Length: 635
Image (cartoon, rainbow, N blue to C red):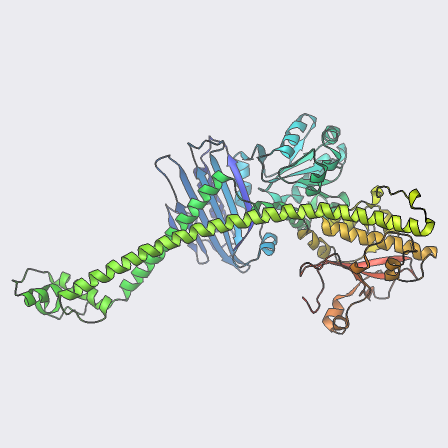
């Protein structure tokens, strides 16, 4: 079962985490019971499983320790509806004698049974319980305050913002929005509040007002700058003096945001995409050590509690299934093991109640499926129960070991994911270096061919306007009419589905796909220039393979001039590649785009950029699709 949302709240020492959790949970359940939910009750008393309705169950677990007065509670709400079974888990820890600060803590998880890791983040919203908690108590992440709404930063508050960005102890994101100007600060704040609804509990959000922008711009290095009108998400463990670290902290540009805003309300798809990276990071990384110990204790206690509960239900069912006492018509002296033992030994019959004799006979019949035959049955029963008790003890020990192993494996998986992200970041940096080296090689090759004077060759940095975007969202904005004014839009226009394009960002936390796709936009831009200037008479593939033609290029291996025959002959697959263009290009506004760029083959997602070459008519190239690899023989 994959977790799609997690919030870790440190409370002040003066707050009782358990009392707070129970109070807010009862209020939340009562609110759900009054609404459209199937809940019929919202209360409980002590540990155990409580049915709250036909499709809802609450499991409460206690794990207290008297020796240090520590208290731990978990509350697991399982609720089933048409969308699936949603599981909200609240872990409340009250550790009055712990050495660390923030001895009171809450962890809130939301999961969906049967969902995969990526799907569940899209389907889960922050529970209203978290919003209510943040409105009721002060909550912290490291030294950074968490709140349910954006915090306005004026000139006197800049230090608080900088401390939050650099806080080495925080595990949640810090989202910072730069002012558009003093006249729009209040409306901008409402827009950012709408944008970050899916980030409640997993990020601290700040809106820098106009009078504080200059101080913030001066305080942050270029690699970590905040641009006016943009929204930047600072991941944990910021290293301000490392320029390479800036790659981790992503921008949301004003044009992309403007496209999804109506008034001050941001469309839901963008709020989901914007929150996805921060939510995934919190879910995948390990909890702080002190909280992890408490959560692990509660999870093991919950497993034990559930096991004992199942045993009780099985025993109760077995007792109910027993027939009415069949020994009532059998004389006690003849039917009971005790009586028969007395007969066989010649001993005087002891006064044995008929009910006891009947019960002993019933036990023998249950375990041996026959009528009792003598005292040997009791000895056999004793041996059987002793053996089974030992087997149960061994099984319980093995279950405990399995639970410990599961927790260990989960911790190892989280560590592996952290290492994978670090490698992904390193790969992004290496890819940038390789891209720059490839550009230099292209320029040198052209100069050698055209001038045959390598000593005069000079390679400078890429023009600022051609620096790669950090997200596909930003890329799309650059080449969409009516969005950011970019020189590329003169020759290359995006006409596709923005939602499909934005899906790429979910798989690309460090912008490697975005950078590669932007290279292809640059290639197409210079290709159009070569065609219109008369330097080239061929197509894109000719441009990429002809060193005599000047311009920005990528490896020809990254380009496919058409699709395979198996793809084009499949009607459904072919239709997927019929993509939109302006009506002025093709009557009806749809055209087959089989030519495409392919930044990677590494996975089944493998994003593609499909385009239509209309240079001969309109002098432009139209990109009709950016997104997941379309259907083919390998998908």
